[in-house]
Image (tube, rainbow over all chains, first blue to last red; front, top):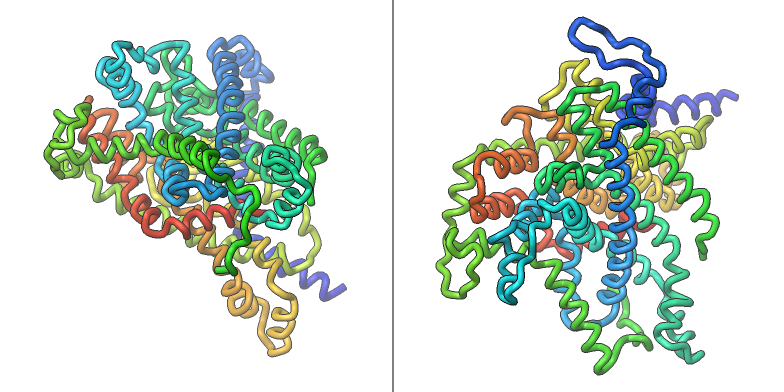
Length: 292
Length: 280
């Protein structure tokens, strides 16, 4: 009994600093969001009071909230498959002995280490109407690139392009690591059996990459809720909330309108979505993923 | 590193190799375009921002003007202090926690690990509202520690180090114990040195993440004294400059400069670090 008790005390002492920080900055704020979502925002001398589900009722009637949700859905649907697909293509290419492999790999990976806020400035210029880079290129062919960032229909796709550009090279790394970990004898055996390259990719490489795909999908999913830095520079949620994503809306409500109770309510929705994503990915996909 | 690679029977050949290389290079050109363009705009006078002629004169004037227009020296210092502070805290807390989780069986360990992993999903970015409330309550808003605090315990770091520690042979641990080393000594003399590649990998990932982080620093700072580079750049390019793209490009390159130069010099190391961090 005694050594076990000592081990427990030692174990928790080692964990204590990290656990304390996590408790204060991860566990507590999650619980506090839930608590504050049932209270009003304190104003001046008026303290917060319990209001039941009033904030949630306000949210259901809030068109901007629904706009942000729909935008976020499109944003996820647009960025996740494309960035993961491109990442896989990049990894396969870079893994093969193509011409200029090192330079190509560097080009793919560089966006990962650049600050999003900084590259958003450059992309912003690309999209600028009249004299932006896309406009100049289109001008050569006598066309007009149009005002993407000022258009209700094209602003979100523009934001999505930048996101894909930023993420794909990052996800490529994980695929590349997995590809390089595959045994070369797999390819030798498949070639002996006369499998075509496509068959080898589809029936052998792809299934063996499934755990990586799962990992990348989880990351892409989280990023779909998190990557909003470029919105601050490129559109500020506009035009007409066309690029307002959920986290950006939380920022606006919490730190522009200072309606902290409503921001806490929106945070609860975000946390619920993240929990759902975790549940789906780990619970359902994990079971269908093939491990060696 | 290893013996000569075995020939890959599926390596593309001939025309197919050309096609594949062409596609890959085209994509690479698209991926490199923003950075290449930024370099072009930054080192040429403003009238050549959209005129691509090889005879355009070179200049460093844009950098000088950007540097003079905002307190970038202070921003650099802030970012440097910030990433150093975060990294040191993350490594210290992470090492202790990972050691306990990897090699010290005790009551409640699995629950503790699960509680830590929650942070992988519920990242600090999602909790900006309540974290701001907490830091305002203890009067830390607009300080560098306030930017760092939500990140000092990193589930990702703990997870990586735990994996690394688990691979240390138990015999080494036991041998050190027989020699009379205490738990902390074993950790510092056996585990930490053997996990060095993981420390380097995680360090690079952490530094580049926090060098580039924007949302939380934007919220929690409002003065030059605390603002990191990313927030400083955003303030600079949204208010001060209007549409002087050459200067904005220069400032953009400047803020990403140290990381970019480090990346170009140690490309292999960076890529391998990110790979290592991604492998379970």
